[in-house]
Length: 157
Image (spheres, rainbow, N blue to C red):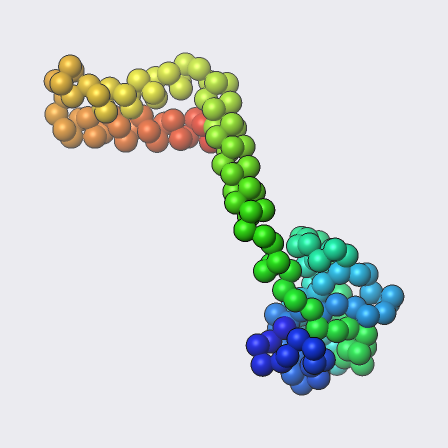
């Protein structure tokens, strides 16, 4: 909903703008929250962005609604802003866990190249004194070994 329209006031067709959020009040349209993604002369294009419980959903459903049917919708809150901080933090930690797990599994699926890449990285990092490496050679080994580990762990190897 635009910032200049109070939540309890139904905006007129003229006040409606792209990125406003609407909810159907009749059974003509599937329940949920819709984002205005386009305004034409005699129709508006709506993208369904939340399910019936106002939870964010990536539906990809586009609806072209005649401006005459504008009264079938009421203003709604943006569903992107209603997620608790704890849920966001938990989702971030879940993504981190699964990313690390897939990375390690990709390295384990290719043990020989992973071992060589790790050896290059460790030789560059800790082998300056023992292997008599110049700082440039040590940096090159760290770079090549690290990038090799990332490439192998990404699953593209």
